[in-house]
Amino acid sequence: MKVELLTDGSPDCPLVRLYDFTPAEAEALRAGVRRLADGQCKQLDLAADCDASPMGGFALSFVVGRRDVGLTSEGRRHFWELRSETWDNLEGLLGPFVNGLTGYQWLSNEGGTALLISTNGHW
Image 1 (cartoon, rainbow, N blue to C red):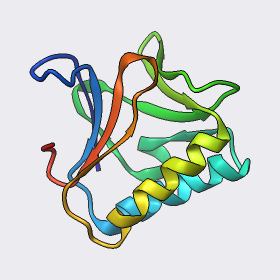
Image 2 (cartoon, rainbow, N blue to C red; image 1 turned 180 degrees about the vertical axis):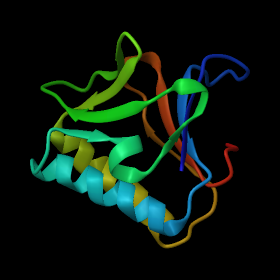
Image 3 (spheres, rainbow, N blue to C red; image 1 turned 45 degrees about the vertical axis):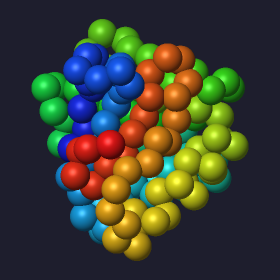
């Protein structure tokens, strides 16, 4: 799975794009998001925990927060912060990709940046 921040090039920008993945990689992501929703963990590093490849040096972690914030940054570290209830909803949106769905799905749009998952990178 590749993870990339697109700041321009589309009216939908800025957006974070998750793309080029197998159903098994989608399942690893879904399982990690399930752990966030269930409170089993507070942070999911996509590169370390889901074997995601940060494109252009954009490394992303998913975190559980008190509010649905979306994308935040601390230096070179980037976070997607949502409440556990919102992670639960997002986990359901990932299910079809585990089953081999092709296409795309908008996962979140908090904070002015959208989160997109797309099998081929297009939307």
